[in-house]
Length: 360
Ligand code: GLY
Image (cartoon, rainbow, N blue to C red):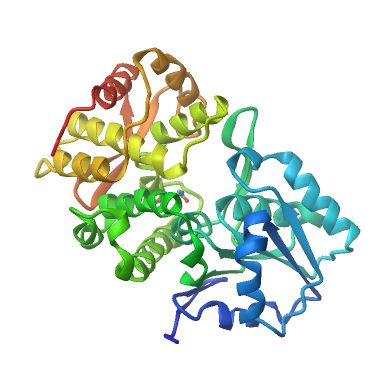
């Protein structure tokens, strides 16, 4: 067993790497009762791994919700609040969120609001959860068709990132995580970008552990300085203003795509915006589009969909006084935030995406 990296930053403990799960038990000793939140997938694939690694941990109650972004809603929160109440969870209880981004978003939100707040620990079991959703204290639910419309920033007591959970992941989840890895490379980590360039997510077998640790540490570095997204954290939104609108658009059609597919599309558009608005040093845009296209098929968005996408984008939390504010690239490995962008350019960026120009 390799030793995980253990970082105690302020009030949050991070245990990252192989073996992290086995040492996670220490986070639960001072609580009166432990509750575990799971979905049907994590019950099947991850709970046995969790129990094997922590055989002496007494879990007072296991609460199950339904998996998937379509279920990231207030109804699932009610299920958890009800169960915590019935199982007599008190203010000295702790909630263990075992799952991907939906579990940590809902679990964190419920924990923060149940009896005005109990502690929680995130144990992310998907690639996206491990490098993004579980770190940084964003919690909440989708509401009235808009992503993350209701929620709050609240930090977990600890985040335990152990690659042991990733063994059972389907290809589609690796692909989805690859989009976020590319994002870290583009906005802040040139070394990471260099490790990804010319690669396909299916070819990275031996390297995933290293990549995950690197990306998780990149995210921790950002949220340590700006947890409430007042400044530098906004660069993590590169690809997400347009990407979230695309994700919502497909969700509304009941034709859900992965977060990574949406963000990959968003990064193609927002790289185009970067090349138009800031002097993109070194003109790396073709290299970026090429790597994204090597890993993601273009989505079937058409010219007719653009006005609806724009309408969805107008609800975005990043809008200020009716104007879009984007996080864009300055050069490879460096992003800037709060760049004001006119609607007309956003439309052009989507048209650029639809054209499917070939960069190989
Ligand atoms: N997923 C972007 C953030 O946590 O800020």
